[in-house]
Every structure is written in C-alpha cells, then in structure tokens.
Amino acid sequence: MPRAPSSFFINAKNIFLTYPRCVLPKQQALDAIRNLQFPISPIYIRVAKETHEDGSPHLHCLIQFEGKFRTESARFFDIKSPISNSMFHPNVQGARNSSAVRDYISKYGDFVEWGEFRPDGRSRFSSDKADEVYAAALAGQDKGMALNIIKRGDPRSFIIHYDKLSSNLDRIFQKPPEPYVARFQQFERVPSSLTHWADANVTGPSNRPHRPMSIIIRLILSFDPHYLLDFSISNPLQLILSFDSRVEDEHPHLAGAVDRNLGSILDFAVVD
Image (cartoon, rainbow, N blue to C red; front, side, top):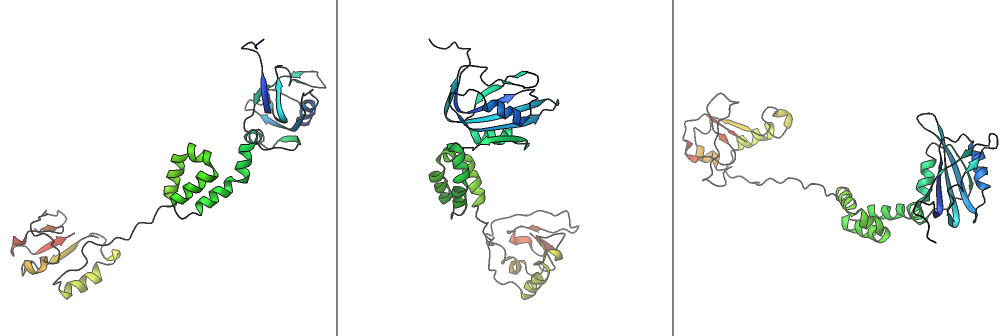
C-alpha cells in the first residue's frame, strides 16, 4: 500500500540531525547514536554542541552511510539519557551537501567525531579541482581565455553564474586607459616668448592653482589679433564667446574658436 501523505520517510546517504534542548554530553550522544540498530552501518558520525541565545543547548549531528539509509520510523534516531532516562527526539533531514553540513555544525569548534569523513561529489570538486581551474583562469591572457578554462573545468558554475563570472573578469582583465593624446599637436607662428612663458608657467600644476586650464594673454590682441589667433583656430566660422565673471576687465573667453573681427578694442583674452 502507498504511504499516507503525512507519514515520516527518509532515504539518504547523509543524515542531518538536530536535537533541541539536549543536555547530553557530545561523546555520550555519539555513543548512543552508534548503538542504534542501523540496517546499514554508518561510516562517519560527527556530533557538535551549540548554545542558543536563550542559553539552551542543542546538539547537531551528521551521519554518513556507505549506501542510502532508509526508514519510515520518526523515532528511529531518538536517544536516551543513561542517567535520567529522558528521551531526546531530533529533527531529521537528508543532507545533500555533506561538507556544507559538517562545516555548519562545527562552526564553533565544539564537536566530537567517529570514522572517516567522505566528501560528496560536489565537495570533492570544490577541494581538489576548483582552485586549480580558477588559478588557471586567472593566469589566462584575457577574459575570453579565462571563460573557456572555466567552461571546461567547471561547467556548472559557467552556466549558473555566467553573468557574475563575466562581470568579474571584465574588471580583472580591464585594459589600462590609453594615454591622452591632444587633438592639436602643432601650432604655426607661435611667438617664442609665448612658448617660453608657457613652459615655465603652465606645465606645472602648482604654478596654476586658480585657473589650471587657462592662459591669460594681455596686450597682444590689440596689436595683431589675426597673427595670434591662427595658432588655436581650426574653423574660423565657429564662435564660442562669453564673459568671465572672475576677471573684472572686459575680455573675450576663448574656447578653441573665436571671432576674428574683434579688432583692437580689448586688452586681453582668456584661453581655456
């Protein structure tokens, strides 16, 4: 007959037990579990103690079997205190990832164990191969090579976590920014006196703290504006003209292109 929907049933190679409010010492609980009448013998048992915030003691237990352990008895894992005859009934679950359960129950380091722990398939990959796969990926020449290495060595993570892998590798293999190259490299008919002044006063940031991107040229536009402006204008039809409130005198604000018909009415210009 089929089991009733509410009946207890467990069928797993790894069993995770939690005994709430269990005052038994760890070793005593381990011995009691080993003495249970298992249909197949366990190969590994770990019992760990945890004290909750309310001060009550809990015992966690991981049991591993050679094959799948099966029972329909909800009371199979009950253990009894040899002193008071009190019974302790656990919560019973199958443990898909035995390594994760083992690490979880042992997080406080208060545990005893018997037998030899056997990692499951997923855990064996994590401990034996994952470091090698991802170290090889980091040693790759670029993002594409790293992704191919992960795809071959850890296809599960490649499929499930592709978006995170791709984003992380974009940062890891990010190319350094290319050095800035100014659009204009050569200027014709620049007076040598202006070149010497710029070399001495513009190249060092400490020499231009207030207007780091500007040059103030005085008493030159009034002499020959056509001669001076040829060095910075790429299109004579462009006009970018504003008045800078930082300087009290009336002056044009030059940003790469100016009106050539300013004449000789201004004493200086500010070039950004």
